[in-house]
Image (cartoon, rainbow, N blue to C red; front, top):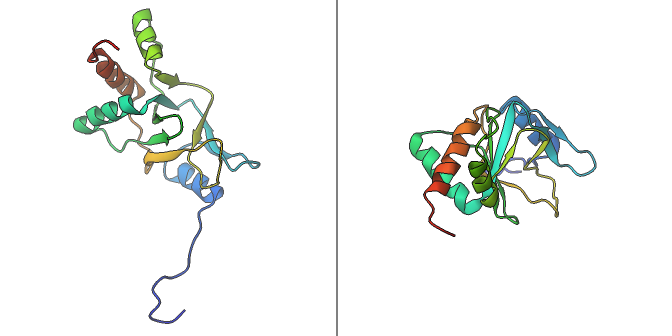
Length: 159
């Protein structure tokens, strides 16, 4: 390297370095699957709301207008779905009609189980990317994200 070469050393990100970032900066309880390099976490204090991309765009717009930020959102390009990482404050919905409307719209609430996060390790079966990356420990209220989805669905006319 000459003094005029400003490119500097090249660093490559690994599943381990990404997982450490998620833990330290974002307070996400992540683990790495050693066989695949997939990064996952158990839902609990952190939950997720998954929905089709078109609906998610509208929900994100409402949240942006309300000033809810930063919004950690994972994209699933092959499935045309987005997953909002949220606080685990969603209570079960008692109204069967609302549950049916969310079900029909393919809105999924993840309160327990594993949530997969984007990893730098190639995984041809499960492509995930950040639409809006996790950059801090902030996560929006899951109840608010779900209410925005319901608001968008209520505004739709027949299918």
